Image (cartoon, rainbow, N blue to C red; front, side, top):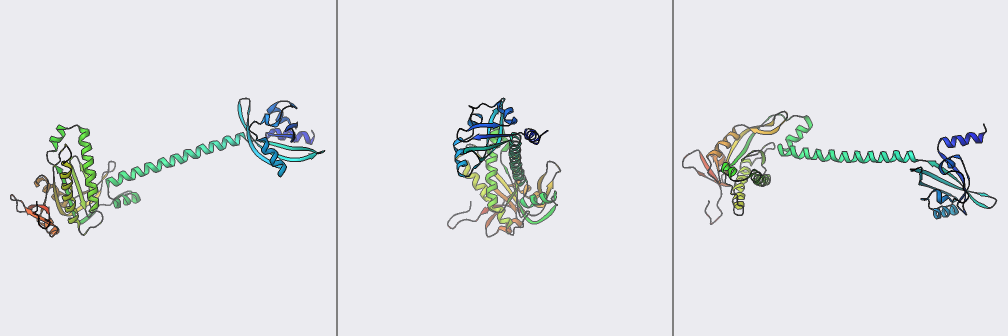
Length: 343
């Protein structure tokens, strides 16, 4: 077998088409067997642009006149299948004729692999974005369930160590006549109302350094001094409680459903930790929580009940009116503005 035959077989094996192009007529003067397999026997009337419809003939001629070399990629139909080739033209001279050697490398498989890689990359990017979005949603959910400091500890170590926090202040709130509201309105209406009210409570509490710990039906519990110490924890809780009631009073003026809350506040110590191994939630419990819940039960509608210890911590900022039926409990009220009487 001759060297020329061996080279021809090698070119065919790797899918390389070789042809001589008359640049004046853009016709093929010679084509190797690979070209024949692609396009059939040589037809002297067939132009290069007939075989490769996507090829820009004008650009080819301009580039060959300037530099004598032109490289591009193009596609064509081969037996109902799209085929892509990398084309390289190199100008040569033959008795004054403008001749170029064309080498075509079949890169169809390479393009298919590139397309697969691009699709895979897009899928990975899409999945990464989805994972990031889900992670943000989980983080947001966990931050609704526990303070950020507890969340950071849980994210780092997988557990939240129980801690005693002292001194702190606790607010416990519920609604007077809640069962009657449930019987008069659709469940969806009640849930929507509670969502609006509790969201407002969360915003108000955050302004004064209070953290909502849990809600359970009409029960709302918030704390100040957990997990970050707050020297003015009692004042923060009192401010939040007073503004909770002010918000409800203003809301009742324009809403058909009327809400009347009673609030108990207390100061003391609590234990804070994540409770549960699967349906876990950050919770606080201890004397301050128990007392706040008890004082709430003694409070009148749209009032805040506390004991004398709490009243001493907020004296000068709030008034404390003793209850007639009990010497130990009284109602927390805002200090009157000059010229006005406390209500």
